Length: 468
Image 1 (cartoon, one colour):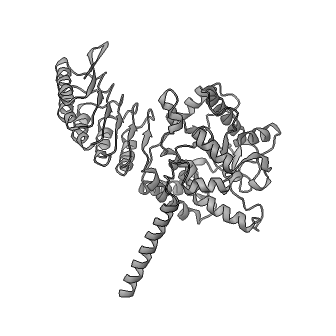
Image 2 (image 1 turned 180 degrees about the horizontal axis):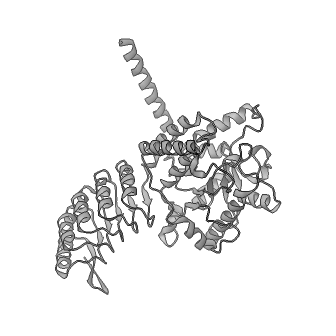
Image 3 (image 1 turned 90 degrees about the vertical axis):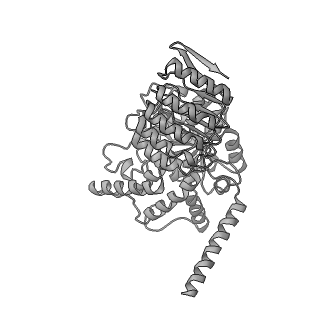
């Protein structure tokens, strides 16, 4: 027993030392920084190859499916310093990754079903960024697993060399990073041909990729544009309704259409396991495989748990207009309870209501770094406001609070008036568009004046008063 205890202690010390050595070598934040991370090193070394968008256009123009990595001519890759320089300069405007369903075991897209969609999407992305005066003549860089990782090849014998196998393994260890990184644009291609029985939602790998993408933080590079929503343009979803040949929207309007309102909330590893089990049962009922390789499930489960630890270190989440309700808010609140570094949270335009808002408030004690909180047009009233007000003082760093366009009446306003002065960092509160009385509004003005923060409220149905 003593020997086992000592052995366990040695193993724990070795594990801790390994983690410390890793952090010393890669001090950057894996899903936020573009240097000093293992993912950045993997990219620069070419373990995950980045292909020029023009390659896919050329394939489609010649009516040829895209090749695997070994058969793509070298001039179609963006490598080394050129790759890293373009990524650091253009961020999510430059680097794009696709999540999609392989249509056959031998080739993911033999009949160019996905290719037609990929080319149209890349064309509109490029037009969007060019319209904003960015990217210039720079090719968009694409990560697509079949083209970016060394493939086994057809037949039983693995055709990869030892160096290629090594690069494949290194690339696979970081495959979560490009889906989750705030400075990549991650795109879900959810459609498959009608004759394919195994859909996007019947697969284990696509569940992993999809949930990782859903938890992405907004892109700081894209957020520099106008309107600010463009920070969330690093996430696009295309389902079976998308017709690449007949879609009429173009450039920025096209990107906006497919970037808004298609997102599920991020989830904890426990919820991920539950979703994986449900997907497994559904796949079994359809007599299709959840994974083509049975050993992948344990790898993916472990990978998600590690990825989640990085995702909750995000500084900004923009989940505006996602059409989330109470159920989604419960899942999000579980994640937010671990987001101690979060500084900016935007949830406006989700019909969450009283129950969902109450669940959100339960996460507030963990959000000690939060500086901006936007809860506009969310349909909650006095019941939820009372819960919010009770939890608000725990947001010790909060500077800006947006509560416009809800159903907060005098009871809720009274609770806020008691809570807001306790927020010593608070600088601005907006409550326009709420059905408060003139008396409640006057009370808030008096509180704002004493506590020295600005407040925006309606003086009348058609005017807004900003009080210092």
